[in-house]
Length: 148
Image 1 (cartoon, rainbow, N blue to C red):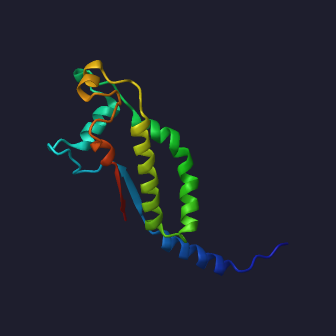
Image 2: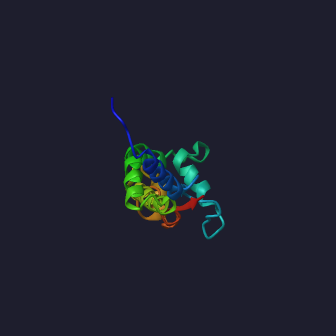
Image 3: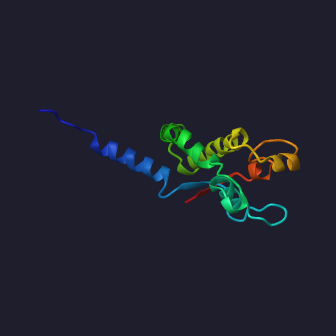
């Protein structure tokens, strides 16, 4: 028969880790409320139109956000676990680092997205064929926030 001792030390250590992680710390990543173009147009609305398309306006879906999540999200749990350990279980600090990392992945998705191509009229107006990039405002609007 085996005997286990030191359970109270393990319990205390787990309680300390839980307290450091925090209760309900979360991160939101993407195009946050209130983000607008200089003319007042909502950046989240433009991002949604690009993501899902607007058939009536002949804008095809360009799923830059969904494809990034599908591609990158399998790596997030392990990365979060590693960051928690490295940050001594500081939940707020970890979520800020996660927010910055995933926001970077979203920015990369915007800059590398290439298909479907822009319409010839759009290329003529912009002077180049780079879907999702015109002024750089959408890219610069990618953000995150940590909430408790």
